[in-house]
Length: 250
Length: 333
Image (tube, rainbow over the protein chains, first blue to last red):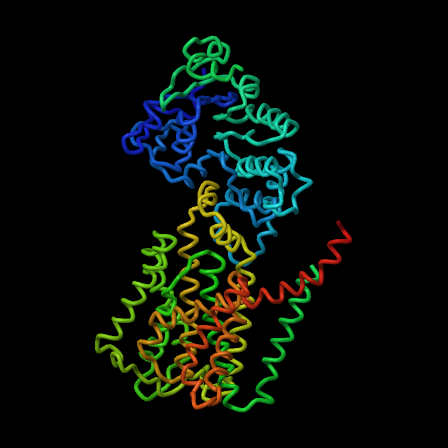
């Protein structure tokens, strides 16, 4: 099997006495969606924050293409090809939809220390932004101010901005949260396409989407990995049933 | 789009009015408007930080005042400094000071940023106030205005108040135009992105510290340009020019005019100085010398302006254009 693009080794994060992420070792491969599920407070978002550099880890290692990236700042990790989307929509509300993506795409220029030429006079950047918008199906809203979008559309924009940075690894924190059924069908389809060229961490509560998409499934409880493996095996696991999936049954 | 074009027309009209002013105005008013335009450059430089990058600095006068001292040092005693050497020197010194202070203060944010910019500026203030450098608390005279000679030929002389006025007017227009370009550039988009959502800029891959630092240095150098001409015009530099009073006053100009717009900064500088002048000229009413208490009235004016026009004086124009365009929007909807 090919080597993992992203790999964590005994990754741990303490908040005071609380181990939000405890001894987590996971692997992410291109062409695979690795979904992480678990009850609220299981440490899924903290895990994402550790991988993106938004939080420093307490101990453990994060290997990207074999290099240890633990401790690098979010901007450096982003420049190495790790793109993340946020659970709580994190966009530039006063900007237009296109400008949100344009500034995301602009980050891939060697430098933005350019003081004279208009930012709109870089056709490649604008094109990359429009392509990202088209991928999530927001191109018809390009000129609308981001604050005027519906919640579901803002979620789509969030993903489009991440895509506009041309990442190789996607860390998606609940991309479907708050989306209407039509949009979420579209997003599931998009994620399925994206996995061909990306390694992907998918944190998601929508179990239908998770089982439709995941190639690998990890269940976290109280910061620890409870089970990790093929989705079908996880579904059958008694421990998981008890700890998590079982509680969702009516 | 129509609003934008109307704005451009108003802007050009104001520029024209300023260009024609010396034909009709007396010397006093020409000098007053020179001073207002200098403060407008200063206010724009601060707006670059406060309004566009979201960095509220309470120490911006340090760069303004330092440039004045550089001019005083650059001039041999009782003689004039060379404009072409001393102006760039003053701006570079202010920029360097901004680089040093910025490298330290930009590691903080929010209220802490306000406090440390104030602290560093006060350190510079006391450096000039408590030591014998340049006359200490008494300040130092700039006896002659800088000479703008190029190989013996003088295109203009700053000793002539009309020439001085036009030099400052050209600089005001130039600074405005350059900042407009800057704000539309890749760099400009990054600093505005930082103001709106800095964590997201980082996660998109921007090393925001670098951009903030470059912005801080640019703003410092521009404040230096303003401080240089303020010192040249006034003929005197004292520690007060780099104190927190001056920093607060220019911050109020930016807030009064409307943060985050260059025209707002210019408007704020003009408005505040005109109001100040108007209040100082108030007559004695019922035995009370109102003019003596102009600062009290100034405070009341600022409070009213902030309460009634949260977007600053420029908010008035926006309000008017929104009222005009409302029927059109209703039709579209």
